[in-house]
Length: 240
Image 1 (cartoon, rainbow, N blue to C red):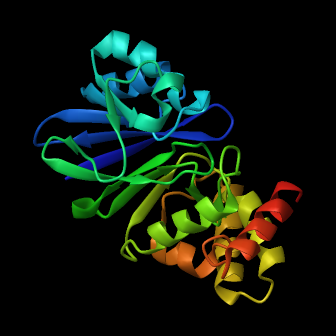
Image 2: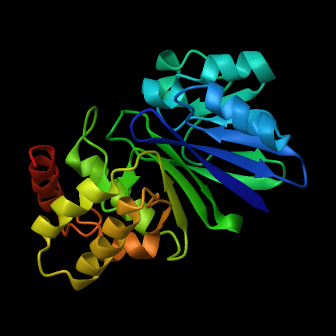
């Protein structure tokens, strides 16, 4: 039911433009900037009715105000970060749901990268928008949270169905994979995946969305057996 369009901006950000044809609603996930989003929606004849923010960082919210001014859209984001996202209209937390047309998304609390970070999971579409919590073969830096929180986040996300498509907000896959090969040098699935990633990036092609099944097999942070192992891997990646 959803058409999901990737809009690359800045150096490595992805904004996701999501259209629900039956209702005609269009939503933007984490708009870093406004102009490319408004232009793409206009090109397709879509009217933006909503923005969903996963966390407060400016490269995820910088386009909020201009898009809202241009369209009158409703902006939804994490209740725990309302003071840092002044454009929010609706505040949500784990247990809440949001809708695009009749398509329902569940809100999941995934703090660590920021204190109030959330993700949006759409069961009917097997889609998750995870911001900067889970990346292809990586996870977000622990700017405002702990390894314990990120470990819990990995447990929450790995419990989603195998075929869940994971839409993260950055093209970090190649650098993540280079570290992952150091963390798990004997992981054959990881070696195979990196060969594919290198081919895609050499052609200038994107590597996301990924899937939960693929992350279970190749993501060293999701695969960390303990909080301590995740913490050690995160520190090692930060200095890689």
